[in-house]
Amino acid sequence: MKRLLLILTVLSLSACGGPLAIIPGGALSGPEMAFSLKHIPAEDIVIQLETRPRDPYSVNVNAMVVEGGLFIDPASDRNWYPHLIGNNNVRIKLPGEDTVFTAQAEAVTDPTLLRHFDTSRNIFRLLPR
Image (tube, rainbow, N blue to C red; front, side, top):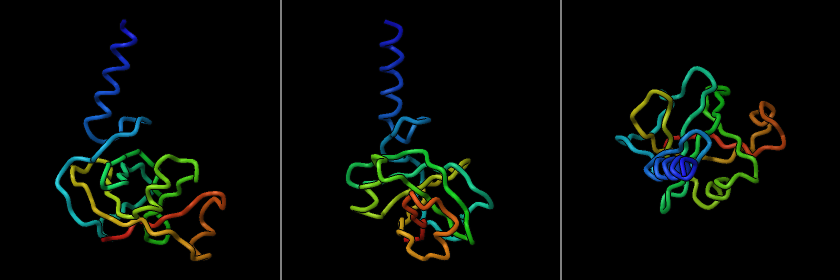
């Protein structure tokens, strides 16, 4: 019974908004603002990424700072990877911020940038929209 209660609690918390640890969530909450280059952190961080605007799906992901840009690198088998292909409009939340930033996830094809990443991954740059 205690186990069932714990499972129901975790599921209800994850359904209320953003992701909880490794459990995906829905829409990120907070005031919304357009993402800009001034919001790029100084180092790699874990961000909350919301995909699929019509049916929001959010996850915690590692984001890398390379050559002044913010990048994510989903593997093809991630549940949210097809969301980026279908609609590249995303919303992100940076650690310690209440603001949810609107952005676009643009697939990277530039070999100069791709050399910084694992060749088995799909690389997307988070840009203002």
